[in-house]
Length: 213
Ligand SMILES: [Zn+2]
Ligand SMILES: [Zn+2]
Image (cartoon, rainbow, N blue to C red; front, side):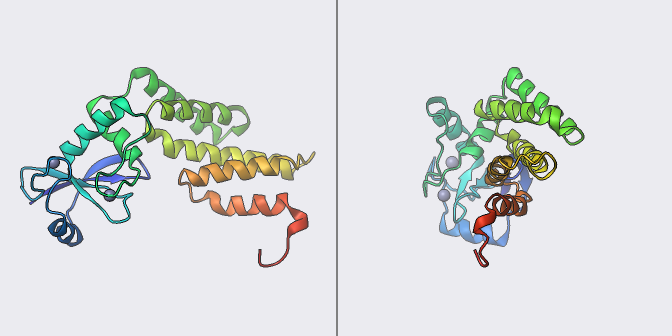
């Protein structure tokens, strides 16, 4: 039985998963690893699939890992599926980190940002901007596992702007700021931000509140 490493693009981590009937069917249609051209079916291999691809593509886990390491050595921010060219950069960074663990200073940025994010839940005024800054820096240095935390921090910052816009002394300009934070948070996959984005946009444009738009 093949073993499957599954990538989660919400947490940016790999974990052992089950091969489904759907995978077995798909592997019948794509029997070889696109990197080494050897069979995927051999039970001594671990395989993985590229879930951001419109239709999953299958690779030997170790082949994709070495591929990520060599590509990301020369090209920052570019890693694509060998079969359909879908951008799989997050997966690439996580694969590379399995071979070369992130530098302590990058982890330090992440842990400080994460700690501030935790505190921001009780005191957003004081901490949330710095949390965003530190988490963004750790991501820029390849630590994509920080992305869900950044999304959450952006959401908190949006809520803070919204609060200042709607409470005395009513900084209405902050509605646009709130909307842009919610938008960025949503872009990073934080779906809870969506109703807030819609509301911030609606409130920031009171003259254009025609029904059905
Ligand atoms: Zn291979
Ligand atoms: Zn693909």
